[in-house]
Length: 518
Image (tube, rainbow, N blue to C red; front, top):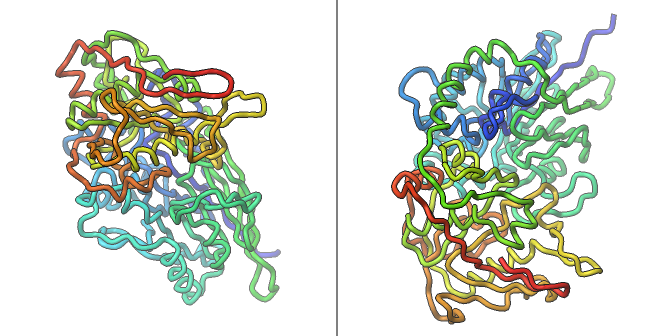
């Protein structure tokens, strides 16, 4: 009998706190969440269960849990242990609750954390070599996007170092080959700077280095995340690579065949996306159920009233015609900081406030990011560059019809990188070339002078220059808030109770076809 020289990886990434199968906006059950994936994982002596990070943050449930938690074993760690994970790496959002929380998570989650470019966190290792039942020696490492240092407040990163992901992956690869690994696996909380199908450059920063890792290193398998794409069975320069979508919509099953060394054949692999099943894993659900019930009561508490419901529309309509949702977020940010101007972005899928009575669920479902606020000093040059980036969101077809530019749709939808301003009135002319579309910026009724300085409040992610706004990172930092913006929104609602929403139209968009007013 020919000895079995294969093994299987069940791979999740970017769960973002969606452990159960509940839709937190509606309360309904869905075929999604880690709870519905875990029962489908391959479990035997020649199988590994791996996670690619961004596990602890991102859902209303985890927001509630971290806000109301007192003592006891850390629930996300219990869930990951019950799901049977063997290895994991850290995602950038796993740093959102601070280093002590990460260390508590790693201490009790039951999996080994591999993150070769992170030092200073207890429980993090560079590499691992595991021998399976069939004798295959699997060498593993993990790396996270070093852009975490741009996105996280420095106080949350105190005492640790995060180095370049590619360089760390290169060093780890050499170490694994020297240790005698039969097959090498890199778990990368990052994505691709090029389209994996065409090779076209899609990003011009080193936030995502998956293409380079495949091209210049020699890993047999590269498991990726961060971009939330579904990529199955891609082969780049001899490396098998793949990526899984977010929020537990499913996982990747990766089957790896390792020939005997004397045959001289190449390692081969096949990966396919397995959608979350219809049935919850009962062990996980027993852990989650009491917390979910407690969270539901906490999330549904009314905290205030709006004078109008804040109803979402499709992304293009909101960008063109405006949305009171963004106006309201900016209203909160302006009061919290006293800045002259505020800017906010919205999630790809916007829930909104469909009733005038507002609950905590409404807030955390509508503002899903774990961002904090910063105030920077800007001038017309900076604002014009930022507005030009926003104007790039729109495209005109041959008939003059307005659509959304591929720059905000590929490789994934990035509606969250279109920003809404309050405090300045701007005019875009879409008939002009990209980069020359901003034809007016007015502050307090007058065209903004190039020498005038203004204060701008924005979230810490955008302040880092992320999303195509590099000039923000060069601006003087004047102040910052430690509270998350979602919490500032709740504070605002609780203190005002009866809220009149700003209905100012801050932007005018001109095209050949007609004039659209925001």
